[in-house]
Image 1 (cartoon, one colour):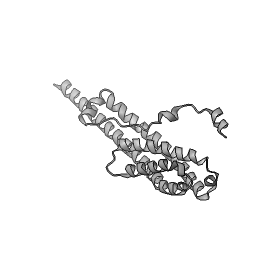
Image 2: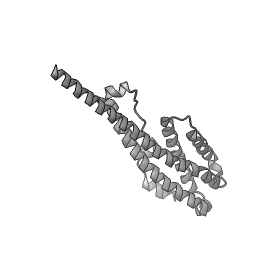
Image 3: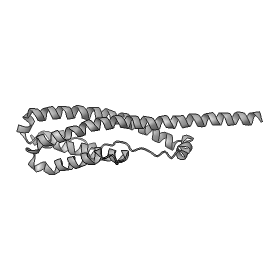
Image 4: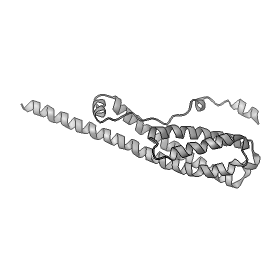
Length: 186
């Protein structure tokens, strides 16, 4: 009787430990995502100013500016899930990169003080977002591992926990940079 009781107590303590561990990991993901969201909000607040400044110069890139504005509106919608927000942010990042590359063809815009300040602010926020994404991805990976690994996977299933989505680099940005080609353009 005593060994059975001892085994039940040990199992209960282990279950409690695993439960608390999963809750902590889930909350860590939420906290990290909250940090990313706060930084993305700062970025989203900059986008209308950036678009307004760049718009009169980048007539040929009007489609890109429109897409960035539409993506920003979607990302700010309260009904957007965290996973959808991650996907929208990845698209916005690609589109902002296109705008910055397009600016190279407009010397007047590159010299515009307002644009330079916006670009510096955007660069600073992008650095902060990058750091926050790394922290978020680490938290999501930790949670995903717990959801998939035995014995916490059993408890995670009972708690209806699902794997989180990582912020990922788009395939086009994973390619090696051809420095020779970059110098040939100038």
